[in-house]
Image 1 (cartoon, one colour):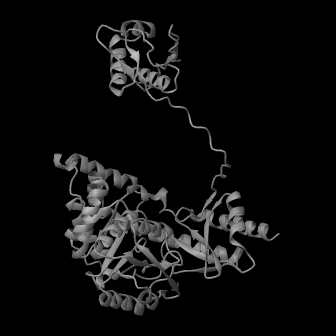
Image 2: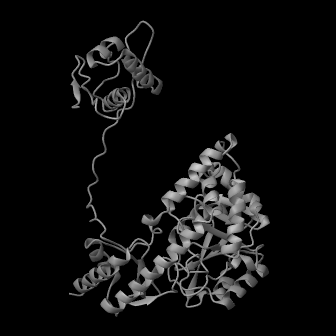
Image 3: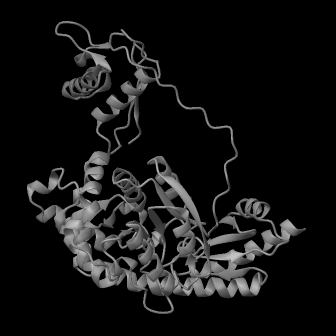
Length: 463
């Protein structure tokens, strides 16, 4: 049915679409609210009586009464007994002007490193877990819950992390967060409260975590990384009381922390009475062998283990966790409570159910095979189309780096690639420039075409 357009004497210009699934009352509310915000209906303007407007629009009077009542409750209208309903004085809202900047072309080939394969999210099994939680959860589950995380999820995580990553975890020492970045922020405040003033970070490393730690008032000590991972001798020389590392798969260079350095780092922490923050952002993915166990298992009193669902499931799940030494567990839980009162309870219960039923293990088995094939295909395509780019890093995780030859500059290459619809990042380090190539959201049939397009960008820059 075509919409009926109603023109009123007061120029309300309401348009009701009787074929829409949106209720007529909501349509009236939306249009009056928008007219008031934009200044078309001025403060003090008297609106028609509910009876008159209902007759004009051909709806029941109750529909208009409800719409007027809702807008009055929101402060858009003023209604007094025996008087006309009038427009209230509210801040006028002007539509934002479009930004004066170029809109980047759509990404045809997604080589960014921002997320797991979003198309592979296990929607049905997640929906089933959430449905079961909504059906079975007691009324108390709809409250704020434990600031450190729902006990059910913390117990499940303790079991899963011990089995899958070798973490020595007790449920009481796990704090559930909204991702690793929030965990780093909470730890920054807790460590500062414990007397830590200087923290060592890998160079290169994840820039967002550096920003977060600096915001918490900690002084950063960048420590160089070489083929064996972070240099522990430089950590010792830095004067830091804590260190943030990615030992399973260094970000962004992609190597693992050498066994002798793992031992040396823990010896440093014990001698310095310091802490190691272990960012295990993609430790579940190792393609040539079983994943190396977490560093935390070797020194639970000195190592803080950080993980999340962002690389195993999707960033939208917004759940992460910190496994903490007893000396920090209470302080981090308090910081979590002050930050946001606790992570969403129902989502925590859904994740607990999802893991308990073995769905996470099944999903990871599928994704390991998929990511391994994509990485192998990417390495082969680079060798064929761009042999001058040297692929680096362990066969692990969701990205690799490609070392550029000296005569190829990174900045113009990235600019040309993005214009061509290739979503890709890069970074310079130690006088060498590299591309950062993610393959999580690049389907295997598209890998060869993506590398050919990248090769064309390289040729265009050189020409």
